[in-house]
Amino acid sequence: MGSVGLLKNSAMVCAPLMATSVEELVHDMLQAKSQGADCVEIRLDAIHNFQPHKDLQILFKNKPLPVLILYRPIWDGNKFEDDGHKQLQVLRLAKELGADYVELDLKIASDFTKKEKSRWSSGCKVITSCFVDNVTSKEDLSQVVASMQSTGADILKIVTNANDITELEKTFHLLSHCQVPLIAYSVGERGLISQLLGPKFGSVLLYGSLDGNAVPGLPSLASLRQAYRVDFMDNDTKVFGLISKPVGHSKGPILHNPTFRHVRYNGIYVPMFVDDLKEFFRVYSSPDFAGFSVGIPYKEAVVNFCDEVDPLAESIGAVNTIIRRPYDGKLIGYNTDCEASITAIEDALKVNGRTNGAAFLPSSLARKLFVLVGAGGAGRALAFGAKSRGARIVIFDIDFDRAKALAAAVSGEALPYENLASFQPEKGAILANATPIGMHPNKDRIPVPEASLKDYVVVFDAVYTPRKTTLLEDAEAAGAVIVSGVEMFLRQAIGQFNLFTGSKAPEEFMREIVMAKF
Image 1 (cartoon, rainbow, N blue to C red):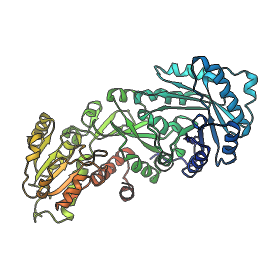
Image 2: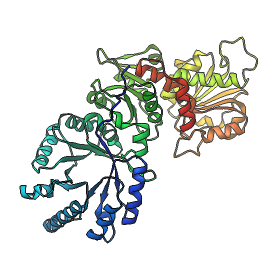
Image 3: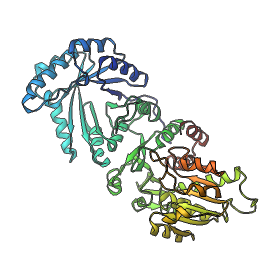
């Protein structure tokens, strides 16, 4: 098992601040420090009625941690020279009054003379930055970096706009091979892992938002410090992640990352917004990317990208866990959803004494009617699990052909989705929702008529955000035993952790996290 390094890396965590008044900025600086920032980035052009001497003196007199100053006056073609001169004047003043870092756009920095640069060398470090909207190759980025180096800056910063997560590999390659201090990341939700993995590949700074001021594609300061613990990442850190679309709902990082640290495994688990599976696996083929969870909508499709598939997952036709085998790099697919969901339902029946005296049966699900809504990846896992326990299965899915195919595979029955509104189950049946219906933010919907809930003995919902969905609330009110998707999530995550690390997961530790955080 890989061990976690004992020494922190040198990457700084920076909180970008864009308040419109100096008073707000002073307050936000204090907040940033309390939430774990090493420094703050202040946009002077966001301040209303900005008065350089007065406002900068107040800011630096009250700064509780190092400050990086940006000033981006708006210009068009005719005003570029005047506004560029104004930018230099303000940043020079900021340096003289106590800024720790000042950032210059490459357009301005490239106009510096050697004599001008020498005036910035004492006490305040200069960052030359450049935004690249369309990265077509690693060579493009290298050329931009070469231009930035010619300015003589202390630190270089390159920001890209990723249209696909696979574009970030160029950023990671640049960070790994750059010989000068470099900050490099991509903006937007698809660029999130460029922030989270920056310290692994050598970025000297990464950004985190203040609590309550979420920015798309930017992790919070609290998550960077508490969940991801980016300060202890190094070159040997193994990367695991959830492949999904969307991915923002995932609770995996707040469970897997603390558990990695608990057992001293040098790994990090991150959300991965993936648009194209084939391209994703082609690009991220290095041993650094050691394993993946698979979420909606890819659990079935991802089977085609595994080199080998575990027999259970193969029979189900869905994979929720992939491991890159260390000795040959092959991708091996598994399904931990099946046993996780079925054992959660079985245990709920046993604990609540709803087995109807059938203690002689091998499973509390044996011979019961199992009503499944959804025949996708999670639904297939539930169906095969129910079949293995001897349940009688009825399947509804908006894609009737998909429902019929799954029903044939598990010796069940498929009914048209439109019949669900009038379907009346037999008393003591089990209901399992394996669709996204009821997931945040559309949490008020339920997949079946509320009146039918009184006939179910157990209602299971694979949705785990929110923890108690409207379906579960209504089912509980109707007298059913309810099983949250959180329980399935925990059990499948335990199985994943075993596969990720090759050792036994600390189950009680993981359960404590789930109970406290979910």
